[in-house]
Image (cartoon, rainbow, N blue to C red; front, side):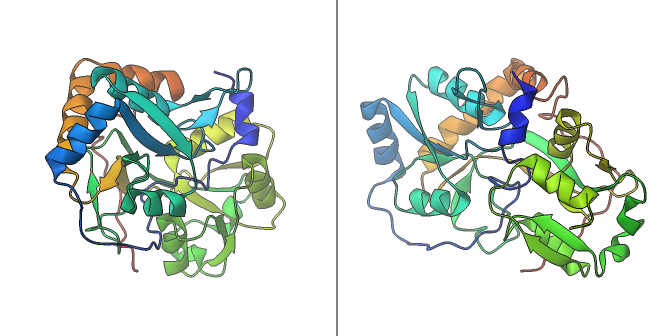
Length: 286
């Protein structure tokens, strides 16, 4: 795995963790859960959506251009164990939501906030990653942020509609919206005081800073919050598919496959195990 690839992928946008995006929701299933699963089995194909731009979960290898990443390899392993070929489609968040509802895809590598407006509109797998939120600030002065209340009036960089930006806005930050830009632009904008902070997933931010060590920014050591988890999403009512996905993920937990993949893509970190964290949780307002 080539860490230089991170310059050309988007860590802070894309398939952002615990996302609360708007979507067109349609009700009513034309097939029973068993019939839908039988259709997948007969086709031999599991249609999966992923971003392709979210290192280290879903990205293209710099040398081979092959789609890979933590969540991509999990889905490939699920396919192998269910004797299905996984057909990947790369798309943005809104495309995933729409494609799930229209049944153009079967599963999306997208974790939807269970507290948000879409909470009761999808089926969810068990988690395959646990994390928490942190924020990147300037190295020399913490961007003037020592407490969450210090976000008031600061400029927070990120993708629209994510819970990361909702948290920043709730504490009074001005939102600076980015659309699929590279990690180095995010980080340099903080360093150059165009923006002041980036709220996002701790492990993702750690890897971005490791890959881009010359930019004078850091993770604010005093502010960790909102423990979270990441799972796959499926159309509401596809219960048989969900059961098979969950059974396979449980097997991969038990036999160490998930831990191995995590340590491969997260530089030795096992993000598949829930940590006992004594950090605050802030309710996210819709």
